[in-house]
Structure formats: C-alpha cells, structure tokens
Image 1 (cartoon, rainbow, N blue to C red):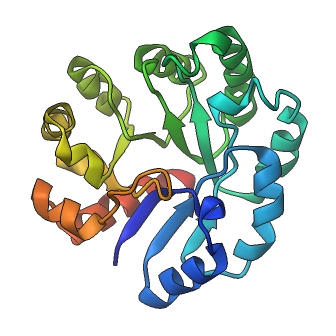
Image 2: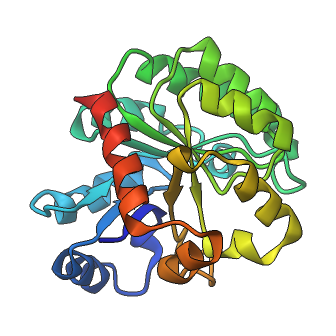
Image 3: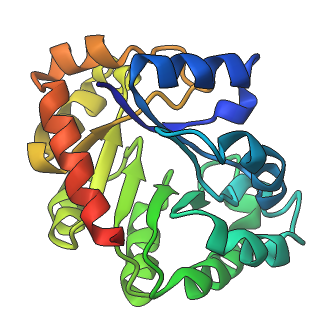
Length: 228
C-alpha cells in the first residue's frame, strides 16, 4: 500500500480515473485544494470513497488573488478531517503579499485551533515564521510538505510532534538529500505533489532513501491517532 499525503487531484487531467485507480490499487491518497471553493466543487466526488480524502485548503499564493474565501473555508471545515494546502510563501513569487498571507493564515489557524484535523502546510522560505504561528495557535497533527528550510529547524519541528512528507524530486538535489537524512524515520510520510512535481514515483523514492512502505504506513496511522 502506498500513501500519497499531498496530491492535487483536482488539477490532474482526469481526476476521477486517477481516484478510481488509486482505490482499486488499495492506496491512500490525500487530495489538496488551493481554494475553499475548489473543495466545494470536489467534495461530492470523494464522499463515497474508502481510501481517498479531500483536504480543505487556502494556498498562500492564492490569498492575494482570491482574498474573500475565508467564509467558504469556515463553512466546509466540518466536512473533512484534512486541511491543506495552507501556509506561507515568502519566495520571490509570494513576498509581495507577505502581510496579507500572515493575516489570512492567522484567521485560518484560529478557526482550526482545537479541532482534530490533519494539516498539510506549505512553508517555502517562511519555515521559521510558519512554525512559530503553528505553535502559537497550538495546531497539532501537522505535516510539513516538501520541506526546504534550515536543517537546524527539523529537530524542533519533530519535537512538536509534527511530520514531513517527502517526494522523489527531493532526492535529486544535494540539499534535499541532506534534509531527508536529517529527518527521523518515524516522522516521514510520502507524497507526489502531482501534477506540480514530475518526479513523483513513491516506490523509487522509498528505495533511494532506504525506507519501506510498511514504515510509512505505520507513521501515517500513528498520525491518524491524533484525530480520533
């Protein structure tokens, strides 16, 4: 059984066919959304699936483009145990709306604080700031998706009980390999980030990093204990 903890199913060319194949193969897939309205459109397709779930998201780079969807986010919060993709992006692409991102993220974290949810976060060039806000709002069951931040912050993130989802693309860079090596094996999950990541072979990636499907499954089910 493969676990894809971060996949943008709604952005694939044929989402329904992809989902049905994942179900037949017995894999677990967590679909991210970039906007609450995307969750609203996609939710009916997931309602009767056994192994695939849709997360309620508000991507940081979409905050400036679609700033009026917080009400929709709060409306659909009871519909799912999964939140994502949310977070901060202070790269060249997102730095111009930094303050707007921070303001919206605070509102999102306030709305999910105390809720039993699994939260997948985007943290590009904003890892310390995001970690600080997650701790401030006492957010639990967090997965840092495609982490690319400081090595020194990894142990601190793990000490908070958080996880990381890694993908094949990370294994093709020196920095990515160093990051994965620093992570505790008990805190690693797998992802594809499809279709945004062309290198998304989970089996090949597990082989490269010396992990097994069984260990990832064990980690995932330990994470699930936090929402029961």
